Length: 167
Image (cartoon, rainbow, N blue to C red; front, side, top):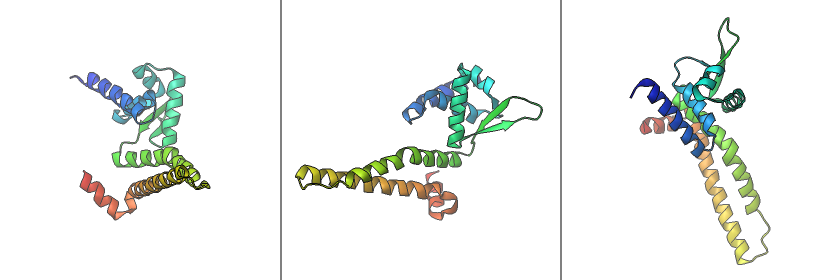
């Protein structure tokens, strides 16, 4: 397999995986392209490489920057903006985990806490509902706390050991 074919296959596959992870295909493709590029890439080059519109590229680049996994760079004497992705995979995992927790887990915890705190009239159905949603809240809270501890790995000796063990 030649380089261009391998790069295209990686970008397309990463894009397909992205939709399974809860982000749109184009956002994941842009991230993949930037992650494997050895130099910062201009928006025009991203548009050409992925065959997408300026608006689509701009919107998805902004979203990736909001996640903290893509950065804008400027080159002296150039008017174009260039973009690069986080290359440190440990840092990338931490940033994605924190963002997903903020966008997905924290809102779910809020709802679970709210619905498990209803005033049950004492029917078996209501008691079961409160019991199950309370258990789910406790479980998701514990999982979120573990995720928080893991993402603090730079200052956490236990997480550092676990990360080394997983490598």
